[in-house]
Every structure is written in structure tokens, then in C-alpha cells.
Length: 106
Image 1 (cartoon, rainbow, N blue to C red):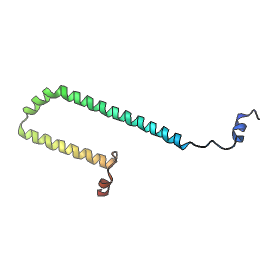
Image 2: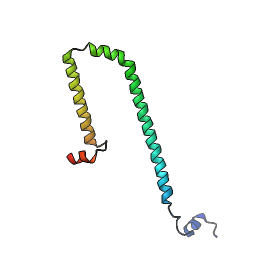
Image 3: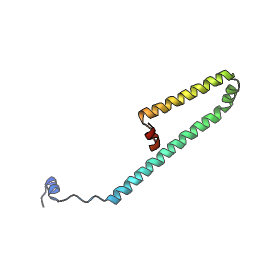
């Protein structure tokens, strides 16, 4: 046996065998943790939006009821344009994985 640790490392022989079951179990636990954190974040964001809308409801009702009809149509067109722009952005950047049938259409 030598006292040089580097020489002993290279003389040790083959590297230990990779345990595929352990690796798969570890990757599964990591994926589950990421999923749970993502779901918790989404639920918290949804709860914040819900509470904000609930608190703003009296003000929004007054604003909507006092709008003239022509302004309502303009808001509807702006909302539709915004949704189309957002959909176009996601399609262009591919930040959202699309189903296979949608990818075949594009």
C-alpha cells in the first residue's frame, strides 16, 4: 500500500457500478418535489388573485355598471386582441409545450 492518495486512487481498479434503481428513485423524488413546489406556487398565486378580486369586487361592479355600451365593446375587443397577442407570443417562443395534434397543424 502506498501513502500517495492519488496513486492509490488510480491503482484501485474499476469504478463502482452505477446503481440504476437508486438513481431512478432519486430522480423520481426530485421530480416529485419540484412538482409539489410548482403546484404550491400556482395554488398560492391563484389564491392571491382570488382574494384581490374578492376585495376589489365592489369597486369593479360599480365601474362595470356605469360603463356605456360602446365602451364595453371596446374593452371586449382589447381583451380579445390581448389574448391573441399572448397566444401568438407563446406559439412563437414555444414556452408552452403544445399537444401533438396542435404541432401538426402548425
